Image (cartoon, rainbow, N blue to C red; front, side, top):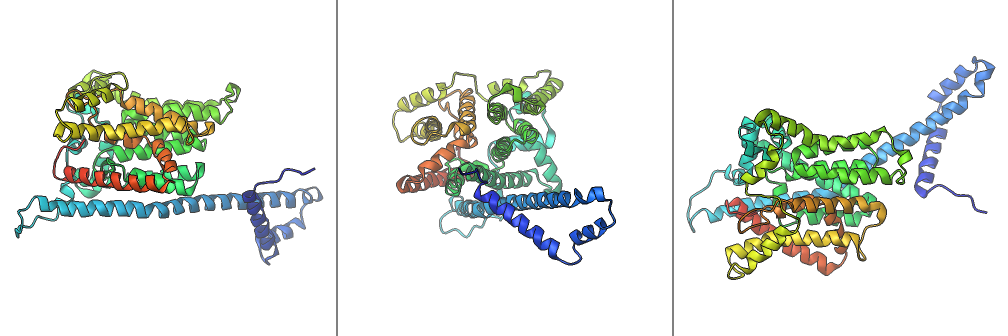
Length: 451
């Protein structure tokens, strides 16, 4: 009969701790020698228990120290693996920021633009709406469509930079880096390093990934959502709830984190209601973020749902999921040709939306589906995707902004990373998505309408 043994990692950890303990006890003048000398005068009843207790405490402390060190090492390794992607993408963004100046000066002209043009060219569209809230607060109900946590951070960092726009770029840049590191750690733990690297790369090259670097709240929301999800997977429920609250104060879509929270909490307790403890209440912090903003809206505008009603001001009305896709296809057909403004922009909106939808489906069925113990990813992706389809835009561009919202559905990039093991698919995605990303960034920097 073979007795069960510990895993190789546990055996290595235990052996290392025991070796360290033996080495320490052999050193003259060590704490263990001092303790042994002190025990010479101890009562006989204590002599049998004290050495055993000391050995147990020493072994436990050593193992704890090793685990903490290993955890820090893994985070540092993730940072090192992600950094080349982050630096490469941002260097590409910098190069395009420089080169787009050529579109604004005549050929062979000696005209030179001031250096601040390089970052001021990123001051586009919704960037201004966040800055107004950061500087003046909410002065009109329609501004509540822009949730408060990102403008609050802009206001705080502005104390150091003196400029809220610069503060916004710094916040987005830092949040983007942290989001990639957490995504890498999540995928590394649940899958493998190769898939973790590809997931981070594919997210960074997604056609709308420019908004992770712009002074928008996409990168902050993604960062907080990933951190909350990471702590759910590790059973740190109060921390997961707090981060979920901040995510909900960043975007209303943060409310969807409540879905994986409930599933993951019950899964880790084998869906046994008798194992539920008081810490399940930490999940209520996630919708509490929406509740706090609702209270502010009631106080400021006498309308607790002002942030929802504000969607009407921006041309968005609630519809059943899928209506925006149907209308987008309809607009392409009725545009009068493929190569015109209406058709091409609808395709730019529709393409990312359908890609993410297909990846979510593959997470549930087929050879790349996730195992049941990882269904928190699937449930979050499906619920978030459906939520983001609820408010299509009026007019001829029903999926307006949906392309950048797809950046938030991070489980889809894990499925895409699984597909990326096929060289042709990997190369095709990197080339095509990277090319579209460069085009959209150029349009954005020139003040053109992107998404």
